Amino acid sequence: MSVKLDSIYKYFSDPDQPDKRVTAVENVSLEINEGEMVTFLGPSGCGKTTTLRIISGFEAPSAGSVWIGGQEVSHLPPNRRDTSMVFQSYAIFPHLSVGQNIGFGLELRGLKANAVKEKVMAIMEVMNLTDLYHRSPDQLSGGQQQRVALARAIVNQPKVLLFDEPLSNLDAKLREQMRVEIRRVQQQFGITSIYVTHDQAEAMTVSDRIVVMNHGRIMQVGTPFEVYSRPANYFVADFIGRANFVPCRVNSATSETVSVAYEGGVREVHSFQGTYSPGDEALTVVRPESLRVTRSAGTKTTGLLTGTVEKRVYLGPTAEYTITVNGSDRTIQAVTYNPVEEGFLEIGDSVEIDFADIAAHLLPTD
Ligand SMILES: Nc1ncnc2c1ncn2[C@@H]1O[C@H](COP(=O)(O)OP(=O)(O)OP(=O)(O)O)[C@@H](O)[C@H]1O
Ligand SMILES: [Mg+2]
Image 1 (cartoon, rainbow, N blue to C red):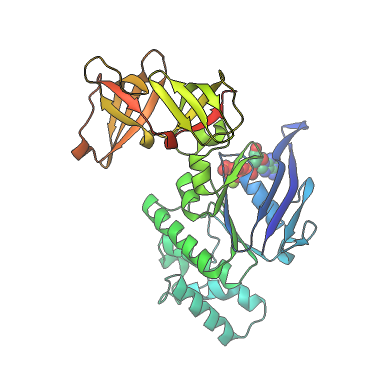
Image 2 (cartoon, rainbow, N blue to C red):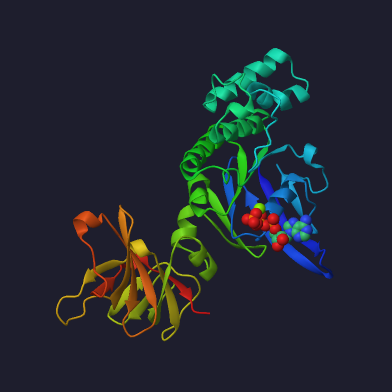
């Protein structure tokens, strides 16, 4: 089912300062399509959980309305909204077996025992839980427990599946496996899903679209590619991945292309936010992996910028450099892949820094 949020606000009163109120969610409007998986991503306290709880009905909005499948549900209690929530703490019942846990909701709805068992077995197979039917939860690994929680949410065929940081109790490796699995199951069943996380790699992996939030407000809604490569503003560029912000000056601008100048050359940029006129200052967002850094040879400058290597971190598949840009006190971050074959730069090396037109995205300076 589709989900729509229309101008949602949520204020909380602060028990320590009763005359002050906390704005947890501010003017959030969003449409989520049937079968789509959307992630709320943002720093701690930005309003992700509150928004999710407003959708599920566990929290009432201070203003605005919630719609599921074209029907307003703002005033319906949680159990009449047909959503299902998967939490960080899986909340599976310790005294019930895996099979009983998964079938719990179906039994509650009065399904016959053999129908319950059939549905439970089917979902267990999809979730790679076959053979664990009679196990008790304390005999399961963290990943298996999480799969049980997910199976239990899906077996009820909710209209909307809600996830609040479901993987944050798992170790890094399991987290990576489980997010691929969650995405697979979500797509297989085509369940409209809303996923909350502050882990951007997780958001990139599971989402059709990412909603980047800050201080209760939506900063950008876009595909993983859009929020990473075409950030709408400084916050998004800075929050998603690592970004370099390189100042430049506008030479000329049309609706399609902005020509900008750096110390050592010009770039024709096709990706930009805002409008520009000749002479404007702008910020170039360029990711560390898009920089080409080479050791300077002789006195002739060939890069858009020149710099000096300050720091090097070797991570195995990559080497990361911090480079001070000549003629400024700014540093930029660069990543090189396959350093074994490409060779390393040394601390103190003078370098030429370059990037392609297509790697650049412009933001206004304000
Ligand atoms: N019941 C409450 N009473 C008062 N303030 C609240 C209440 N619930 C949340 N808040 C405040 O609302 C804001 C948003 O909280 P929320 O839990 O939605 O953030 P979040 O994005 O989920 O953060 P996290 O990533 O840490 O889980 C915070 O400032 C929080 O302190
Ligand atoms: Mg939260």
